[in-house]
Length: 115
Length: 116
Image (tube, rainbow over the protein chains, first blue to last red):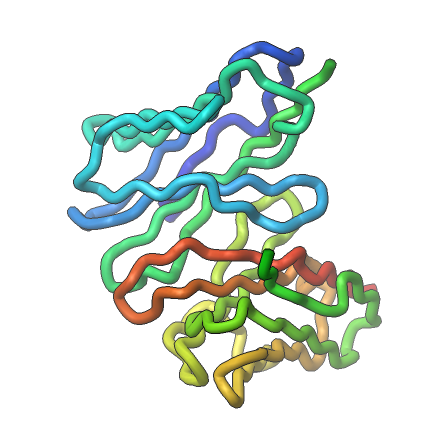
């Protein structure tokens, strides 16, 4: 069963627009971690954020912000004032208790930012 | 900045042939992972090492895939014989925290395999 769902396959925006990426997860564990990774065309996955299940505070890092809501099992990611360099595939991932190193990734959302 | 090194970047092979991928993690990282990423999908864990020991290989197709990390440093992932469905990107990652720790994973650029 798919544990991480990223329903948006591709999002296209014009530079300076905001873009929000949705992530819905499924787990029976009370302790777990959620992640967002960025995969630019070069291929390597770049870590963006880690959030544990007990910390529902939203986080902002520069133009990036994350909204974690346990009530809806969602961990959404917003890029504010998008730039061409933000063009990449973004993955949401889940790590559950007992298998911390095993990241279960969603299918990814391709973000295309045009000038 | 330290990086995870992988080779080769690209590999084209015919089915039934053997293929091997190499990974050198960031120095000092005890935990090493091999993930497979099929085009259009998210990565899937194949095998996780803690030092030289396998922690999780539940998703590794053991009839044709093997992985080793003999001295707890670099690692090799082998496929023999390769099948058409093995065409994918093979990503290596390492992290500083092992065991029950949850560390940030550092990924290499991957090895893209095409099986003809």
